Every structure is written in structure tokens, then in C-alpha cells.
Amino acid sequence: MSAAEAAALIPAGANVGMSGFTGAGYPKALPQAIAAHAKAEHAAGRPYKLNVWTGASTAAECDGVLAEAGAIGQRLPFNTDPIARKAINAGEIDFIDMHLSHVAQHAWFGFLGHMHVAVVEVLGVTADGLLIPSTAVGNNKTWLEIADMVILEVNTKPPAKMEGMHDIYYGTAIPPRRVPISMTHADDRIGQPYLKVDLDKVVAVVETHKGDRDNVFAAPDANSNTIAASIIDFLSHEMKMGRLPQEMLPIQSGVGNVANAVLAGLLTGPFDNLLGFTEVLQDGMLDLLRSGKMARASATSISLSSAAYRDFEENIDFYRDRIILRPQEISNHPELVRRLGVIAMNSMIEADIYGNINSTHVMGSSMMNGIGGSGDFARNGFLSFFVTPSVAKNGQISCIVPMCSHVDHTEHDTQIIVTEQGLADLRGLSPKQRAKVIIERCAHPDFRPMLQDYVDRAMQQSAGLHTPHILTEALSWHQRFLDTGSMKIG
Ligand code: 0RQ
Image 1 (tube, rainbow, N blue to C red):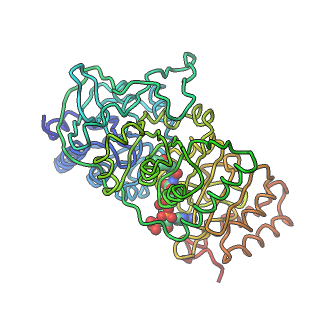
Image 2: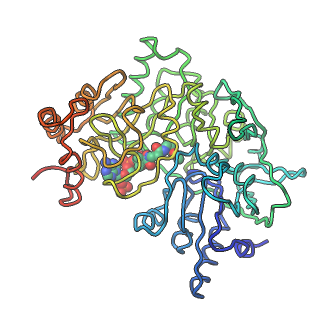
Image 3: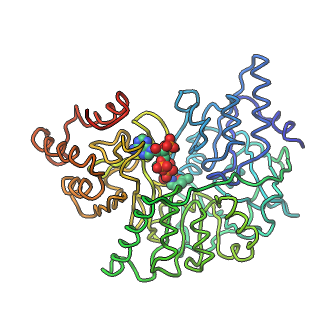
């Protein structure tokens, strides 16, 4: 069926589960056809919006076109598209920012409402009616299970030899019937290579032949390289001290340039036979696999630059033995992250002097991308790093502030903060001890005296001295930036 015919089957107001995770495996044709359909409906004076649930972010030809057409009512759980972000921050899209490991189970529990339609990209359908998953698994297993009707986009562009790479676990149940997930190594296979679907629910099959978005990265800059070097030194030290096993623990790495620089640092670092247990497999991890430094990687999505993607395609026989793609409820599962002892590394927007972390909001009220999987890994990891340059916007914003303008990860989840200024190891420290090391090691020299002055005065004025604060001043740095364009005074 054509994408336009398939799009016409989706009624206004439907809850639609789409494939897609960090710019990989999203539907390429349906969203554009839905956007055209929405525009036609709007022109005829009829309302048309859908509630769009995915694995994580998609791309311009999915979130972008839908947002541009005003076709998204509610969106969850993660978005990086600039047009959709603008609509979210203009209050036009109701965005629900969720831990990525929660999405599938909250959908089964019925917490999110009923799913009417699933639109899922696959690489093919076997003679037995099983589905070959694409470059991202995300929440596809769940969408296919719970949707009333299913639209498949069969994309013939990704290498057909990806068949067999995936590991789809069908052992999850709803409490009280849950059982332990029997995975003890990051590279264990516990499921089957195919997605299942009730063929009676498949109302349309649409063919596409199109690659995923180009997930380009700037070459790591000096700050990213310094942060990466600090983390690698720290891990070596932990190993020397006997706190980190010699065989090293599996690595999770968030998205972005700093995350990629850390992976690039591991390429020349002292660790061998690494394992990845992450959600997004980016260029840096592909390099580690190619070099032999990393033996295997488990993820839910392959999100590559076009150059890395070519390498993946050309060397698919090599990579298919080394990469395992799982549903995100498994790639990000707290039980597994804790059992495997994952080392979590995620970027943030800002940290406060006590170690609370804001990963999602700019100046307290505007959404950037979402919490993604950072919380799944940070709370349950063996070690948890949060990284950022110490300043943003040409030095006018301090990424270390008296109080975060929004909190995604509490002080209880944060172990280690790293900026290009240095590394603050917060393990075993009280709030006041944390403030001292965060200010000394992580704050930019332009803001260090202001932060110290804040703490000194809070020690005099605060009602309680466990986490000293001056409540009328705690968020004044953000307000000053909004008023003057700088957090600096004068
Ligand atoms: O804005 O693009 O307008 O210049 O934030 O900042 O430094 O380019 O960093 O691309 O690595 O993203 C936390 C957003 C970092 C990301 C975040 C502004 C800065 C710039 C981006 P401009 P950088 P990155 C795995 C785990 C949450 C989800 C997560 C993220 C823009 O890593 O979304 O971890 N993480 N998932 O100027 C105001 C500050 C700022 C600031 C930076 N303090 N105040 N603006 N910026 N610091 C993936 C998944 O879960 C799927």
C-alpha cells in the first residue's frame, strides 16, 4: 500500500506507537504522509493531531515533519528535533519526559492509555510471519503487542545481513508474575532474533529504501578530550586501588560529543576486552569494536554518522557477531544495570554545588531533549559519571550553580562530576563536603569565587546547616541570565 493510503487509516486523536531510537529505525514514509494528511485535514477545517510515542528521538523526516504540520498532540518519551522542541516549549505539544526503561512497562500497565496504531520499521518479514528488526529495537516489541492495528514499513536499505543480530526477550510479565531476567553477562543472548506480530492486526505494509539520519559529530574539542582523560585516569586509579575489577565492567555512554570523546579515549587507554552495555551505539563504540579493544556491545539502537555507517555496512559480518540489539526495556533495565555493574557516563546541562543534576531543562522552564536513559543507568550503575563543560554560551552560563533550576538526578544518584576543570569524586561525602570539592575541582575560575561566596553566606544565614541554602538567592543566577544574558554580576 502507499504511505498515503496507510496514513489515511490513522484516525485523528489516535495514540500511535512509532519505532525509532536516537535517529535510527524510525519510520521514513508514514510520518511524511501523515503530515500531508494532517495539513489537508486542517485546511478543510477539521482538527487532526496524533499522540506519538516512540523509543527515543527520531529525525527531521519523522518528528520534524509531524511537528511542522501541527500533527502532534502529545509526545513521549524523548525528542531532539528542533521543530518539535520549539512547539514543546511554546506549549503546543504536551511532552512527557520519561525514563526510557519505564515506557514499555507503563504502556502495558495501561498508565499511558490505549494504543491504537503501531507504525514500525522492519527490515523484512520471514516466511513464517516473523519480523526482522531494524537499526533500533526501542519499544517495538511492546507497540506490536499492544496496538489494535499495525502498519509496517519494510526498509530494504540497511544490510539484510543484520538478520540475527537482535535479541528480543519475550520473558517480561506484569507484577506479581515477574521472574528474574536471566542475564549475567552484557553479551548474553536471552531472547530470539525476531519480533512477533499478530498478522491479523497488520493493516498495511509500506516499502521504503532509505538510510537513517546522519548522526554527525564534531571532532572532540579540547574540553571533551580533557574530560575524557580525567575519566580514564580515574578508572585506572580505581582499578589500582582494587575498587574496580581488573577485567573492567561494562560501559554505558550517553549521547553527544563528550560521550564520544570518552570512548575515543578508551581506544588508546589501558583497558582491553571491554564490553558495552548501553542504549545507543555511536561512532566511538564502533571504533572500539573495530580496534578489538571492545569485545562486544549490547544496545537498543545503532546511531552512526554516515562515514561510520558505511563501515558498518561494509563490515557487517564482523559487526553482526559483536553487536546485540535488544528492546530498550532490557538494554536499560535497572535489574541488569545493577547486576552487571555498569559504568554509566552521561552528559548534563548543569549540576548544583550539592550534586543534584539537571539533564533536561534550560533555565528551569524549557525542555532540551529529555532524561532519556540517563536515570536508568545513573541510579543503578556501579559507577556513575555526569560530565559537562564548566561553562556554556560563551562563558556567560556556569554549569555549576547554587541550585539546579530543574532536577533530574538527585544528589543520591550522582557519584562523580567531571568538567574540563577537573573531577569531583562525591562518594562518601556529605553535602557540605560535596560543595567544597565540586567548587574547587569542577567550577570555572570565573564563577568559583561567586559560588564560594554563596556557600560562605549560606553557612551564616541558612535555617539548616545540612544543605545550606539562601532560598531567595538560590535561583538568582538563572534569573540574572534571563534578565541580562549573563550569570555574571555587573
Ligand atoms: O545549546 O546547541 O543552543 O548551543 O545545551 O550542549 O554542550 O553541545 O552538549 O550535545 O552533549 O548535550 C545534556 C543536552 C548535553 C544531552 C545534553 C546548551 C548548549 C547547547 C547542548 P546550543 P552541548 P551535548 C543517552 C543518555 C539527557 C539525556 C541523556 C542530553 C546545548 O546530553 O540531552 O543523558 N542529555 N541520555 O549551549 C543552558 C546550561 C547549558 C546549556 C549546555 N547550563 N544552561 N544551556 N547548554 N549547558 C541517550 C538517550 O537517552 C537516548
